[in-house]
Image (tube, rainbow, N blue to C red; front, side, top):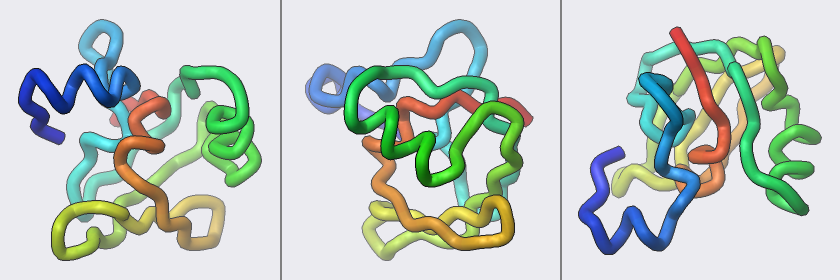
Length: 93
């Protein structure tokens, strides 16, 4: 996900540590494994409750016409989530 400086400040979860990538940066057809879920509070709990936990394989199935939200395939089901929310999930290929 390419953001200008102003947008990056509004979504601090879009910044990744090291050379990692976050789930919100993935493109259609890409697949990766969840390595960590950052953040705290209700959003982190919701993400974990939806099944996005460490070690889970995730594939981006499709994206809305303007890019947000996007549909993921994981654990035998489909999940639609906003890219800003997905940004707290770190993934690796």
